[in-house]
Image (cartoon, rainbow, N blue to C red; front, side):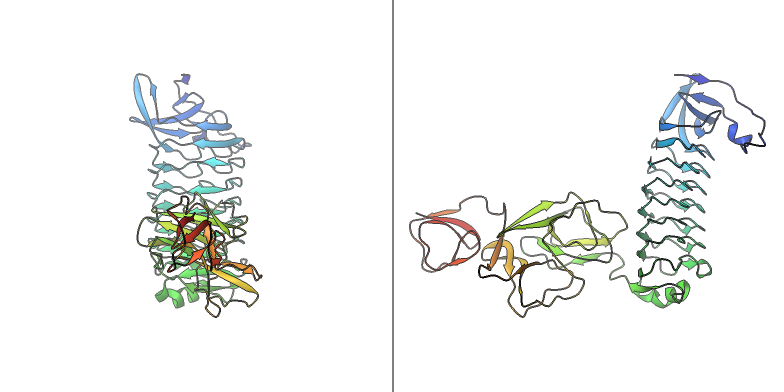
Length: 441
């Protein structure tokens, strides 16, 4: 371990603009500068700028004493243009003012769960950051904390935050969706100005004060802001939609969107194009691919359903709970055969429609009778009509073994081939009866 056991004091350099305070430190250990207070260590700046990838230790030994790293100090990494990533230890509780200001090549930084404060301008002009996960313990996000972080596409504001400061997300031009929890009391002036791609905002706060009607700008045409039912008029007045080309919508349920149509095998389909939706931990999300008469379900590996994608859901419970979220979804939905709509769908005459059900042939997609509509927010499969249109599309892997061997077909049973077509006079071979495979010898 390398360290310098003296405090550096440098005169203010008028031309460089580097202050005396920013150049003072108590000790330098393994390339990281610290100020010491009791047994606590605060990461600070020093004689030279940090570069590359930095891993800050949770603690270190110095002068026969153990110090715990508890804070990223004021301007600690400010204008470290060559800094690319920082790993912050779990014991850190605060990220102070200007901590990462103008770290223009910073692409990755973790914020530990114990952090309660993110100071003013903490990440301002960190334009290469693509996502930030703000821990649930954070109660304060300072003014301009994420100003001009143009690479960020999503950010989650924890439920303990009460104030979103002035210009906090100003210039986050790639931010597409954000959720504001019910703990927030104030949304500061220009907080979301310049967020030109911000298409959906969920405000669970009942009557958050918006500063001078200027928290949001008018650049995101078609934006929807979702609020609680009783607050619609309040926010229409507060946001001043005469200057904002969008709409105020009612959050369908402020706590959860719960699908009640889970069938007796605990399966369901779901679709929503308003925003990404997160499922509960007991639920698995599948995308659906169709090859001739066989459905293949692929586990997306994510609890986030991408807005505008229909999915199949399976739960170990008797219902599935979903909540709107600003968390992004990175799943590849290519070749997803399932479609959906936020509104009830009327069948087109040139197509055959299939819906998920658990009926006589087991779990699969059954042909929807002509004239029946597809319910809103449900997934369905739509296939162009042909002479070989089937009544049933089986799910690959759902029936993997032969359940029964018969010497001859029973008169009181209905038989289907493996493509889902009804067989009037079955002979020798493999068939499906009541959702089970049977062999006739």
